[in-house]
Image (cartoon, protein in one colour):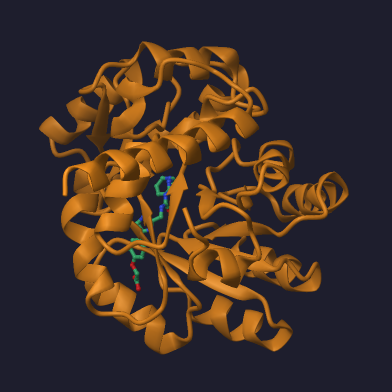
Length: 313
Ligand code: TUI
């Protein structure tokens, strides 16, 4: 595949970004993705600012290639995280779960690129007006905090209303997915769940195995009632969330049940009571392999898929 505007904008060999998954997207994984020719991203999530700063310093030692940081805008530490990202001159900043205006304003001062994640064409248009350099259109197939629209419907509608490059996310884990996204107008893709199941991913072995064991209907949505729906693998925690929804529990109960549960799953391997955030494509992921093999395998498969399509003409 020829380079796209995303390759050019980010200075990367392959138009593949790694999602900014809280607790998983640490320096070790992000550096592996950048070293393999994609864009590795350190996810700040709800991390305390000191830990985020350490991870940024670590990735600078582990790679001399472009890398990024993801700022989760609902974080209680968001202002400190922004300051650190600017002070450390992080070259690419992606944002999630909110409006990125303050990040864009600060990043412009130092020439860093800002790529917000959006879940609607309306927000895509708005972030373009605010000065975003590209946009990640994330479908509801994704793991973690999600929007309503599926990638198939969201992508072309975003592509039609913006001029900046569009990166597709949600439900992509192989070369066929890449080509499908490009057919809909994307110029790059972002993957999360596929990279959780990589050798370099710091997720607990039981977290990786839970994704490998998952079937196509196992990544379910909980906490819709709170306005912050989250997709994670079915387990005791998700069933407990379902009970809260059935009895229309007050939001504080969701918060109490959810606090610390992602970290418990990722770091302690608590896949029963922890939050095993993962996307709908989990059912297709059957192995754990090095990041380089994942990326090169997907690019080779994308070329093969394009050849097959060409033969249909
Ligand atoms: O942010 C994500 N995925 C996440 S964040 C996260 S941590 C968390 N845990 C529990 C509850 C909430 C968060 C786990 N996974 N993806 C990017 C994303 N952003 N998906 C959807 C959006 C989004 C939603 C609304 C972006 C913008 C938006 O509104 C824009 C505005 O202007 O308000």
